[in-house]
Image (cartoon, rainbow, N blue to C red; front, side, top):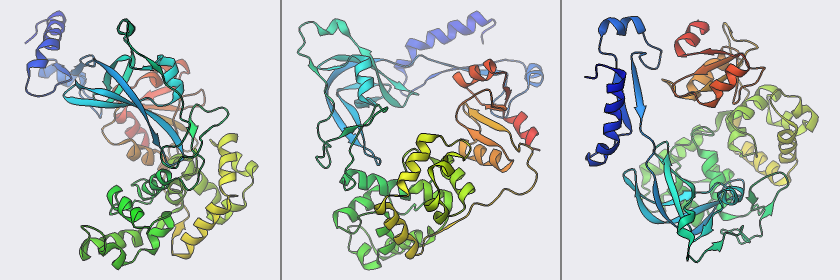
Length: 408
């Protein structure tokens, strides 16, 4: 029991040191108003009561040595530097790697091989390097970190594209890219082929049974049963999942193709505007740029994708093998948010994709950033900088309960 706010603050401070002695991890304390009458008066949002607050501790920091930098290859060929660290205990786990995002970030942090660095777990989960302990540089043998000269997967010379911070492997036959593209194609938000996971993909690639996503639709029962730990039942389940994926929406198929700068939202906009793959093949760059929310650079990338003979051949083969991307359904029923633009921020009581779909069915356009054209900001817990931007642009801020009432 804490009679005053100062007592509550002191209780919070006392646990900053004591938490290290607990046999389990904690990331803060919860302060509650000790009065049922005040609970009723203060009420609650759709996410949490207004009579309670979680006070988080500052993220735990650790120091260790940067031993090396490895390079990861993404599905679009982006080469991402990954820090290799002397293993260090941090927030309950041993950390030996941390992403460095890109080589501009390495330059901003001033990192060199052999540096002692400080790191935290962003969101208590993802290791993140904060900076260099410069005092530890005295007498240390440091080496600069150079951008990659070769793709670690295929050995091709990477390109640093104008206007971008990333280095790219531009070899379309790069094995690492091929694997990542197939993983993306089968992922839950793309074609949702849940029986095809990373381990199975690696096995199929190693056996030469996969070169692209199209080859998934050529797999036979005997191909799968010949693989390690794949019996008849599990093989049949894989084939059923692949067969079921043929009946998909156009937006899922477009997202699964892995077109650069085309995420779920852009794929949905394209599907609603053009209705079919054939229409997209014949769309000009100007046609694509005319779609609301699609800029000139994205339009150019989409246009180039649908002029690439390799990509067109893969799409054509997928369609021949039975993939049938269906035009998007136009939301029916009342649309109280027709013509409105909504931005979502913070932690909500339901996953963001659920809210996004709900808002779009109500006629709203859901975007990622706040501007003067934004009509509403749906704000959950810990809304961050988007809330500040909403206030700056006089955008109406709603919590989940208020947005639910508006939808009704």
